[in-house]
Length: 231
Image 1 (cartoon, helix red, strand yellow):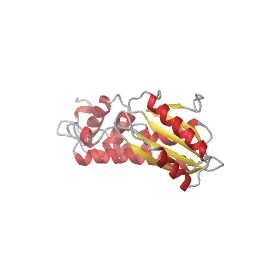
Image 2 (cartoon, helix red, strand yellow):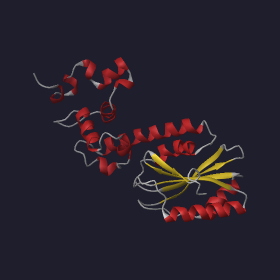
Image 3 (cartoon, one colour):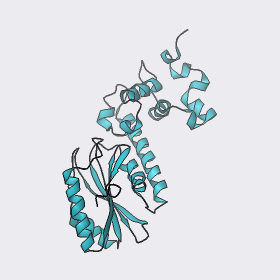
Image 4 (spheres, one colour):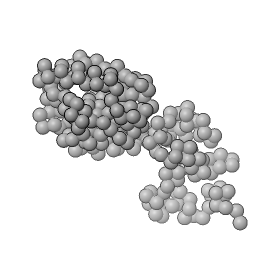
């Protein structure tokens, strides 16, 4: 008898087909590969949608964060993934990020560095380039607004102190928190990170706008200047 994975999905036992399995047992019963298979809908002549999804995930050590770093062209390097399927995968992962961010925004109050990490990790954790963001806070440390300041390449992005303080003044912020990511996965601050942090702390003090922290996100870990006593 042929192995299940040599058969088309329609030839699998009903309880093993992703759609039927979802309806019968719920979305939690599906593996990551099965969920991706539902998104892309079909595989190739020699591979089912589930097998294709497993192959893509295996290349990434089954890490969804790594999958989230891939762009359309990179996904399309996999045989069986065209532009439409690649866009569908990327859109689904982006919805997941936005849902998590929405849940965190509802809490609004920032009390520790881990709150900053939880807020920004879904947004920055798996980006292939650097982005620099700020959180504007009121006197109760509640979020007034989040703002992307700049976007750069793999190893850096340009920061303008005047632009950041302008946003803080316009929004009547009592304090700000800085955050950017390191696509390399190394959370240690660079000399440039230290320099811009010091400039912003000094400039903020002159305007009575306190810099509470600068958090560097590296995949699923982070560095906090406040926690390390470096503000």
